[in-house]
Structure formats: structure tokens, C-alpha cells
Length: 290
Image (cartoon, rainbow, N blue to C red; front, side):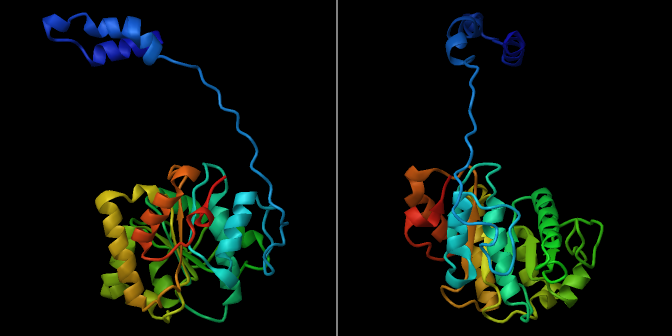
């Protein structure tokens, strides 16, 4: 506490004589009640368990039985009844698994079809790179997906360019992705903008028909507010126009650990519908919470 006091005192010096001792008075008197509180403890309760087992998907086995919120997400996102969904659960709750397994199941169900079947947008390249490793590990772990499902990472900058899937990395070689587009594309919204307009990247979409792209996921959806949210909304509409995606065909997913709680589901769904240009249905069912 003394260190914090000294830091504030030196960072915000009082230069007006009339207020010479005012800040000290705040720190020594009021500050101890309003600035310095706690300590606080938070007990992390276990997530509620779902009723399903690791064989929920007929074509692949999940690594663990699902939490209840993961099971609820799977019920909405699986191939048979895709419904756009918001996943608003906390950090470490397994949000990625909420959409990863339904997408993998969909790809396995359409292995004979070429083209990009799912796009996942990340706000930062570092996050996309980290998640790419998780995708590679899960695909390599599962016998049903290993050597069958292809994931491509297309972000800015140069990295160790891989032309094949490995146990720890996805495809990063851009020429390879253009020659043989991946089933799942990981990128960011700025790069996706380039991919839609650069002539050199048009081969990336060459294998797609109007119904190839079935999933669009935006991770950390809450970061796309204001002007950036408007940019993303326009980009998604351009993407659907570029691929001639039929109305109500695209299943959209937004994830966030800080987007809100069960008291603001209506506004959360309205925000998501404005961004994606798709209906999410009943707010209480469309928003998955812990």
C-alpha cells in the first residue's frame, strides 16, 4: 500500500498552492476507504456437467465429456440444426470447444466437397496463432480427423511456412492454400478484407460454391464496437455477397468472456444480429452462459 501511495503522490504532483495538501488528504483519509480496499477472494466453482458423453458426435470423439454450456452450444451448432449462437462464458470455460467440435463434425460430414467450409476471425494475430496450435493438436489427436481435415492460418507477417498439417501446426503456406483451399480458415478481419479484393488471392475461393461456407465465427466479439464494428458488419455482408451465400444459410458464432450476462441477453443478440446480418432467434436460447 505504501508503494502505491508513493507512486500516486509522485505521478500526480500538486502545482497549485491552494491544493498543495489536498491530494495527500485524499490518500491519507478518504483514500484508505475508497482507493485501497480488499483483499478480495473469489472461489472458482466447477462448471456444471452436461448429460452427454465423449461420443456426442457420431464421427469423432471429444477429448472430455462436455460441460453443460458446451453441450448447449453443440445442440445449437451441430450440422443437423445449425443456429447462430453467442457464447458468453468466462475465461477458461472452453469456448473454443463450443464451436470447434461442431465445425469438425460438419467437415467430416462433407469431406467430398472442396472449398472453405468455416472461417474463424480473431482480433489479434497472436491469438489466431495460439488457437491454430490448438486446432492442430485436436485434429491430430482424433483418428477421425487426422490426415482428413485441413486448417489454414492466413494472417499478416511471415512465419515458418508449413504446407501440411502437423501435430502442432496448421497450414501457413499461402501458395498451398490457394492451390488447395483448407476446410477451415483462421484469419483476422483486416486480412479477410484483403482476401476478398486482391486478385492474387482469388484462387482461395475458387472451390467454393454458394453453400460451401457454413460457419462464420468471430472470437472476442465485444472488441468490435463502434466504427470497427461497422467495418466488420460491412465486411461480413461483402463476404456473403462475394460467395453468393443463400439467406439464412450461414451459421454465425460470436464468443466473448466479457460481453455480458443473463440480464442483457436481448441487447447482446441485437448487437450480434447487426454485426452478422443473420437472425439469432430467441435471446434466452441464443446466448450460452455458464
